[in-house]
Amino acid sequence: PFRLKQIQYRSYQRVIEIYHFRATYLSVFDFRNLLRRDAHGYMDTLVGSDTLLKDQYIPPGDEVPAGCIEVAYLPGVFPRRKVSDGSALGFRMGNANIEWFCFERCISGEILERWMWDPESRKVQIAEGGVVDENDPRLLFDRVASLGKGTERRVVKAAHKEHNQWHGSLWDAKLRRVKV
Image (cartoon, rainbow, N blue to C red; front, side, top):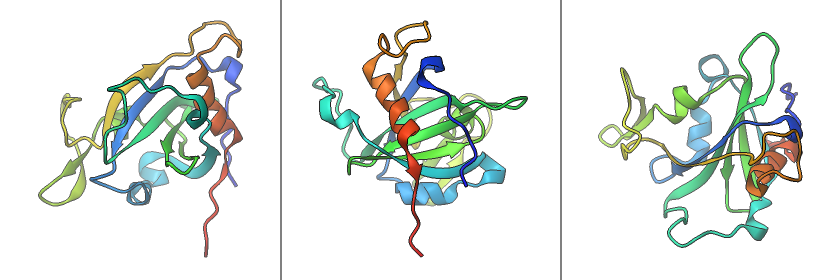
């Protein structure tokens, strides 16, 4: 059973980072298969509705590039006492669903900013050493936007609509069923 408890939206003040996942390098299925609890804090996959499809205006030039999938990273969405807060990574699958990969800790510096595609070996490699160039085309995740709540008050109505919708999709998500 899934054991992480999500923070209520009125209390969620964190910035949601929006990425483009380069699915031409690696499928979402293969990405999920690389995740492990001991190495990455991966807990489980939930499936939520993609409510952003209905009324999201996409300005010209802001479309998701071909071969990419829009992804939202929600840091600190699963508060935990005495340890780091859990996070979630939501992939807009294009079938009116968002697949949420849930982690018991932060993964931004560990996965989102360091996993790279090696075209020679055709495998994922972890960038070693110092600073990684965020414009490196080998990165699996390309950060494209930061989405704040739009208010510092503990409210829902005054919040940025897309920020609220990402959180709401995770809030209503259910465990992904696995066929055996």
